Length: 395
Ligand SMILES: Cc1cc2nc3c(=O)[nH]c(=O)nc-3n(C[C@H](O)[C@H](O)[C@H](O)COP(=O)(O)OP(=O)(O)OC[C@H]3O[C@@H](n4cnc5c(N)ncnc54)[C@H](O)[C@@H]3O)c2cc1C
Ligand code: HEM
Image 1 (cartoon, rainbow, N blue to C red):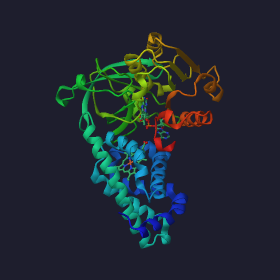
Image 2 (image 1 turned 90 degrees about the vertical axis):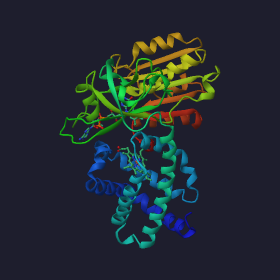
Image 3 (image 1 turned 45 degrees about the vertical axis):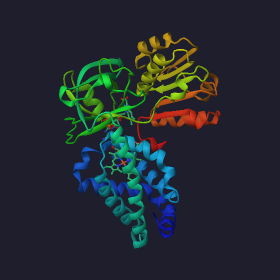
Image 4 (image 1 turned 180 degrees about the horizontal axis):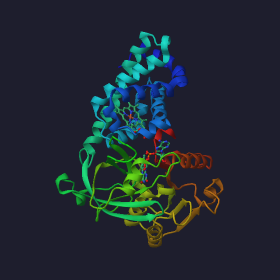
């Protein structure tokens, strides 16, 4: 339990944190990674360069400080971050190392303003926050379908659109994963561990990829977009596209994430299911569409998919085929941004009934716009679900 005095000190640091939050976490990462080079096998280096992870962490620390009187309100957020941590195989002992460097960074950035009282209050508060994360993650480790990283063989690579390749992977005999016993939750992601040998890379690289089929009959499936960059192509997507061949083995940790169809609504046919995606963000939504079709084909469906053009429209034939099998009302909009206006408030207002159960997936930028637009149109928060292909906190 934190004392009243500690909580008061924490509260007084909020304005300072708001001013220096990002600087604190940037300093923290650079110190921690330079003194613990092994962590380079866990953290995404490009996220560091682009400042994405520092922003996510800074916001989490601020949220914690703002809720110091009642840290339990953080639980839903902690659970969602915990899924990512569990998928990346973050372990309790690593929290002490992170805490050490976070506190050092607070000291360094605040300079003379960092009194021993402030540092002590933050040391205590970090410990309480870390314990909440550790206990949530402990449960997620228990629930995971398999422990650690397991070797899977790539059995097929299939082009599902321009620059998007679907990977079908099967567990190797030594890993002991039995796909026939695996309960896939459409919307969840796999985390893939590779060791790219390109761009002078010397570290393991971990990336999340949404499961793109509800079926495990032929293997687990995920689809990867080749990320072309102005300065450099994406490390893992390039490696998976160009270097990983069928027959090669990659490490995969058990499915994770809390993006899933609302269970109570699958079996009814009054509240429509609306699936909105952009680019490769279609992946989890295809698995959801398959699942809805299997469990209740009578439910009204609205499918909105944005892509650059027809060639980059992922799973085109498969999605059309699935949509044709529904027995209730089906509406679909395929937006090709090369030649058509982008998804906007007008389209959403005209096509989405206000009582819909909405699932959105795409880039952080795409989703930020859609979430705000739907809110302005009167959609309730709990009926709008989303999975950004980047840190969820940045939304
Ligand atoms: C929950 C979740 C699910 C996801 N599901 C999918 C999915 O189903 N399919 C999918 O394709 N992706 C998915 N992603 C995204 C995926 O995890 C990776 O982020 C993506 O593949 C890019 O990784 P990368 O290693 O290729 O790019 P990175 O090397 O991480 O680079 C990211 C971007 O930065 C650019 N870049 C690289 N190096 C530099 C540099 N030095 N300077 C400036 N820019 C640079 C790259 O061109 C690229 O655009 C998902 C992400 C999350 C969080
Ligand atoms: C209380 C302490 C911590 C907080 C508040 C925190 C917060 C966060 C947040 C907000 C994210 C982004 C989640 C998202 O993508 O939606 C994240 C991701 C991540 N965290 Fe933590 N974290 C903590 C501890 C740790 C520890 C101990 C480690 C282990 C070294 C760790 C490693 C990572 C990694 C590797 C990512 C993925 C992002 C990347 O690769 O850049 N975190 N964390």
